[in-house]
Image 1 (cartoon, rainbow, N blue to C red):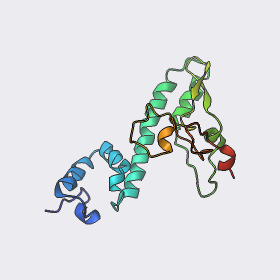
Image 2 (cartoon, rainbow, N blue to C red):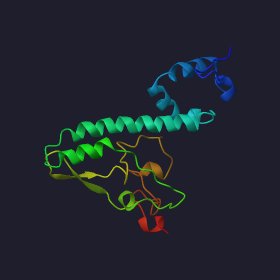
Image 3 (cartoon, rainbow, N blue to C red):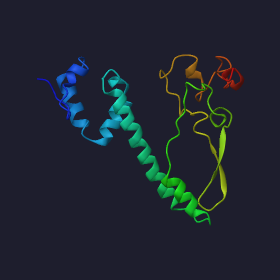
Image 4 (cartoon, helix red, strand yellow):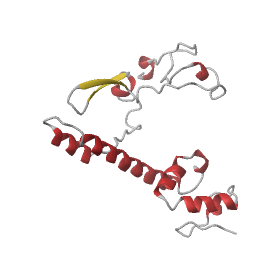
Length: 174
């Protein structure tokens, strides 16, 4: 029996490798916004014809969730410029990076291991820059092949394959 999505499409036609149970589960899951986000982020469903549209919806949903958190954080500010923080939060959008125009990441991504953030009381605090690198906690055995299983964090353009390799920014921007 063919499982139809809410739009009337036969899911097995979009991805013939799906079993009937998987297609029914996808149909049910796709009825919720969270389901669309989870489906679009799943590598298993990349072959589904609707993947680009699902990813666009997932990106929009993620942006809305982030904006809601940012608005609640801006409400906690006690500084004289609280209105500016709230206005900035209300107009928040995820940045778009056109990889075709420049393949070198922005300086904030490749050169700043920490960032200074103005917090609710107006003071600044330094934080690890989540765009610079992701620290594995811990690297589990068998999760990565060598040399990646030796590194404690993500690296861009590694200097070498040794356990103490570093991101080579100069090689990256060549």
